[in-house]
Length: 348
Image 1 (cartoon, rainbow, N blue to C red):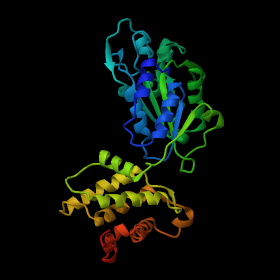
Image 2: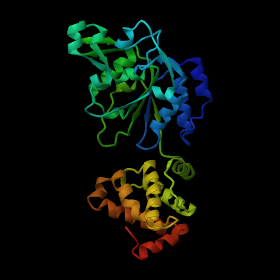
Image 3: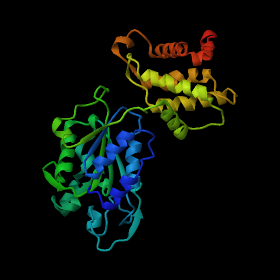
Image 4: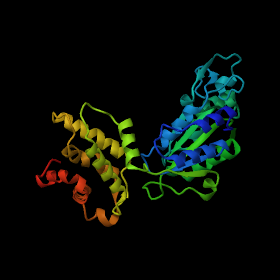
């Protein structure tokens, strides 16, 4: 998508404040978009890649489109078959966020799902090469907006090739047909690290067409705390500052563990923050205690991390987490008071 001068000015002024921290990634994103580059954000799940893309779509200026059109056709540049057949247009204004389209990458996603397909019934009626016979796919709905393609490296190679043709040539080959794709959009993809299960290697030819931005976990404990308190569900119970510090620092310690392959994301921090509150409320307390975190630990974290093969065949992941929490408490004098829960058996 060619960036207008208006959008360039908005990008330059924006702080991308939907995301806390990640200043380098924000600057890299601005730099790439200002020169019309296609971008892939690389990083583990749950760190804000989707939020960053939505923040960009929110910057897009409001535009006049054909009322009720899913493809954001404008009267001067109709895109879909229905609008191409019209002679008069009723218009409406839509903001940038309404032009944010997400595609979830998966092994069973097909080129036809993304690009569209020829309807055989319409082909018989209008002719096989007629625009009326073509049913546009999801990529068209990002017209004049942002196409956010999540987990690109979970898609088969055939789909990678189809997407490459669209981004490079503005055309798509569907069966024996070549279809022009005049859709105009900003493309932002994401990619999990290659050591994550279920990922496919993206070809060098494919990657050569993109700029890659690398996004990690929150840089500091304070930033992660701000994310949790801003986005987490807040119940009518107090969450002591020291307990919050302990919880966040423990999760950050898990991310550094040499025994963990898939590490707990910020969603895990949010989950533990919310569940500890609800556990305290159910117990009839007005303040979160250490045992609320300990009791929620397995439910929130067990499925969100994976142990390395050298560890997972020797330890149950639940016992591993309890052991890591106990070791963490014993190793940090400022949290020594929470060790009593282990001595007394505690909950969970």
